[in-house]
Amino acid sequence: MSESKKTIQAKLMSECEGMFRCPICFMPMKMDQLRSLICTNRHCFDVSRQGYLNFLNRSPKTKYDKRLFQARQTMCQNGFFEPLIERISRRIKHESGTKKQRIRILDAGCGEGSLLSGIREKVSPHTANGLLSVGVDISKEGILAASKAYSDSIWCVADLAKCPFANQQFDFILNILSPSNYSEFNRMLANDGTVIKVIPEKNYLKEVRDVFYGHTPRREYSNEGTVKHFADHFDLLDMEHVRYRVALDRTLIGHLVRMTPLSWGATEERLQKMLDMDSAEITVELTILIGKTFA
Image (cartoon, rainbow, N blue to C red; front, top):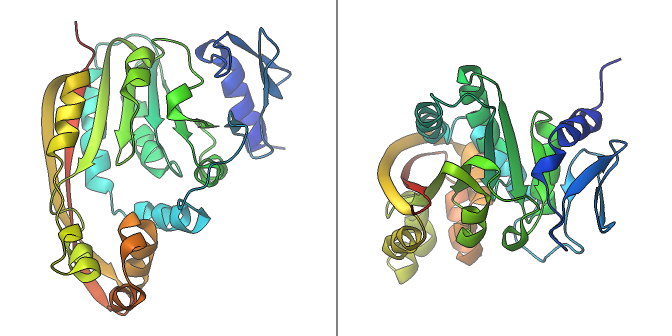
């Protein structure tokens, strides 16, 4: 009988227990009988039935719900972000080519885990001593979906402001279309580690913006402030531009509408107008920021 996903993930956590630190008192942690992570001050975090760790006392109120994550997972499985995954994977393979030790990747704000899983699949065969992939998100629904779908990674519900990981643990920290906490990223990044942040460009999902917001100010977007903020905290080594178009049928348009937070500010009439389309060509335009800690 094959091992359960919970057991597989718990063994991975036990193998890497030195990577964790208590988010309450910041002390080291140990895995106890593949059931719980316990720190030296006896703060205890149980491995859930589905195999993930929850480091939050209470779930925050958020619009990122199960429906949204299911839609994003479907879009990823249908290749919506495939060129982005390919570009990030290529960068990681290039950066990690000379590393002898096991590569550790943290996806901060991983959602339902599809992007990290896609990157892991492309990078892992090219590493000398394997790859450890870890996803963290504040949404329990996202981590639950990730844990069910991808048992070869460690998944954690946690606040990015109090990440449950010790200092200098990760060779790469990914932050893809998600909020950041740069002080924590700097703390967790290994010597000569790399931060890879993905931000939308002005034409990202422009066809959706056109339908939802017409000629109102919400149609426009600028990431200049985001780039400056990143450059204030990291040595900005490179900016890669990714632009492509994806053809969607009526079903995938529905998933796209459910996936994107752009829909939260649209009227019911404009939402329905998008959902009634039989097909659409959607623009994906993104910038990848590559940074390292300042010397």
